[in-house]
Length: 494
Image 1 (cartoon, rainbow, N blue to C red):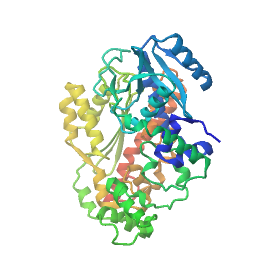
Image 2: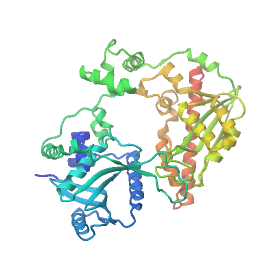
Image 3: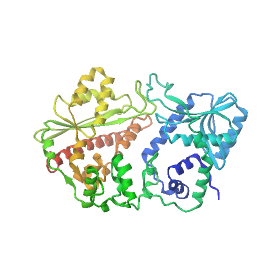
Image 4: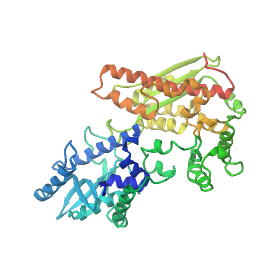
């Protein structure tokens, strides 16, 4: 039996043969994350902008996604409209079907343009474009060149609706040549794989690189609760965990003392094996050095591949919400917050309200300071009238993340010091899973986009507003609880 292969299926094979096998034989096991869907949506948006550069182009296909009809329509357009750009031209050869983003007339031939939403030419784009080129040329369409069109991160949105300059092209004709000769072999390997049994492939880096695999949940179901792959950082994931697996260790709890040389990674192993959390009580001295009032601060941001607000850039992190818990020396706690769901640029009001709420002194505690500090510096550049006040806030920031890394680890954190991994180990009643609509930063961005959409009803917008406020408040209250835990205090403040 010969299986119908598309470029995307062969790309799945190149990432992991097991992924292709499951995709064809067990598609019901796929679990598409919100991040995956968001990436697809961005790709569609950038594709639309690319097509707008060629207003006389002809689109192949319809909403029914009839590939047989698309193949015939492509032949007809190539024959009857040789001077027209073609969108989604569909070709089939050697058992593979592809759809080209753009075919642009170039003399007697065509320039093939593949559109990507990244800001650089990724290595994994080359085999992708090699397949496109190989199938198109063997199907009878001569290409003068192959280029990659991607986002120019230096683009600044100056005029409403004008995205000229957002996308740039890079000629990759020569770069893909070494890969084209491998395409027939890849097709044959895929056919043999799909005609056999499920390949045995262990969990590894291929599960998330270059893309998150939708079958990870299925493949990891039989893994130990504490696999060696939970070791964090490049040293852990690319070095120590590979070494441990090569030695035959898969369960971190079974790795003996003395095998792992890195002290931080050895602590993770030790705590995992013992099941007992470790807290260095000298952290109390660190916390005692922080004066009052203390401001526990967190931001939420949105980024657009194609900017919607003037004077902003692609993928720029644009703050739309903040939450702050203010702790006084007597232990009392106040909460202030900001959220703009008007759909207009929120950064000015965000800055103005933030400066007013932070007062003139006292440490500002955050979790992973590079994020908040970077946003504050960017807003200082945007609004010179606020620059001095905003930079003064940065001078007061204290980062709880390195404190947590240095002084605390719990086995349930499984190699992560994210606030969402730490919080359940010190205050399980505050687990983010009990939040509705918004449980993480990705969901916060999705909720914000839905809330500012003109088609969103007032009732739904109010639901999203409450969910965003509750989520961001949970982030800053989590930091309050973490600080109290480090200080040896019990329970929530008054």
